[in-house]
Length: 102
View 1 (cartoon, rainbow, N blue to C red):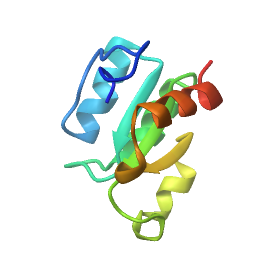
View 2: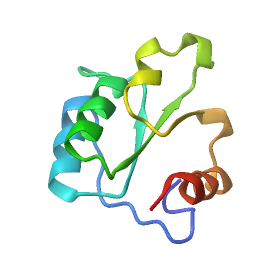
View 3: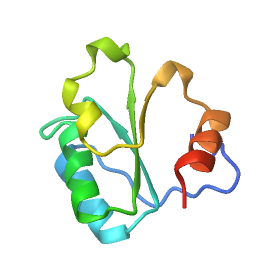
View 4: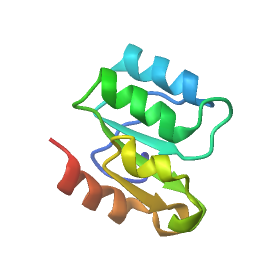
């Protein structure tokens, strides 16, 4: 998705919530796209830790599940928004950045 959207550059990836927190601390990105369901520490807890340590980072949670199926912690983790994977594309990414970016 990042590479398909003009003006965005992929700077890192992580396969778990713990790794995502470390990668953000190391690379200092402006935007983090975080899957809600991740091995180990889930995406909502990782987002909470990221936002706590890096308040300027925009975190967008992504899930294949309907909103009602997403853990209630998603609403309280500091993420800018939650987007269903089915609704996520370059135009959505651009719109999210226009609203939530610096």
